Length: 298
Image (cartoon, rainbow, N blue to C red; front, top):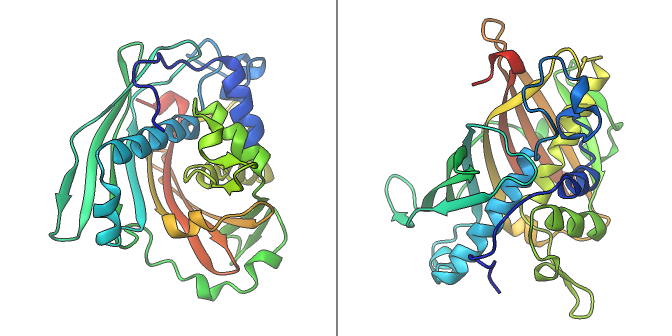
């Protein structure tokens, strides 16, 4: 089943609330009441979550692959990783008309085997996101991270710092209710992924990554960050997702999110490296999120 290409796509404040509730994202930018408490907020209302937009884009790609019969090519070349790279060009607000454009697929065998597409997302005909997605055989970012050096990750205290306070740990648990609600918030039919009658439980690939927002916010809260006076916005994202591990996710499984921060003192830009860990030591996803102080954002 495919997403209706002719149906107008719009987010409402209810969709935003559902996304926030399903991912525990308490960022004031998305709060329909507290958005006005942010110093210098130019958006004049709540805005759609970045991961909510990416969830919709991921569903568009699922439909695109299906409609263009590309899954066989992906399977034949063992392209088990989804890689996304994107830049934020503007905010998306409730009732904006959303248009996502996916360019024709490009299959390459050199220097690495990949199937890729460029894409754009526009809100009321204004560019909001630009990027590309690739299907890869191996992870493409943060491959130097040595998880074996961290012992007993699932048993580490929640919301704690380890490795001389360089790494923040946040634990989450998968449950089908949150997975369903995240899909609804991304304008996606939940029965495509969850159907109790047919015994189908398939978490969408962007849901685990969306839980990173909670980890980033709780890390900042632990360090007494002032969300009102020092707001941060996303500049860019990179994500690499192990699709085989996503397919293995079940309700009540534990996800451990590790966060490492790097700050450029000259520009104020913050780069957050996030790793999603399941089954003690398997890397479900790797992400590199770049954030900027609001006053310095594009």
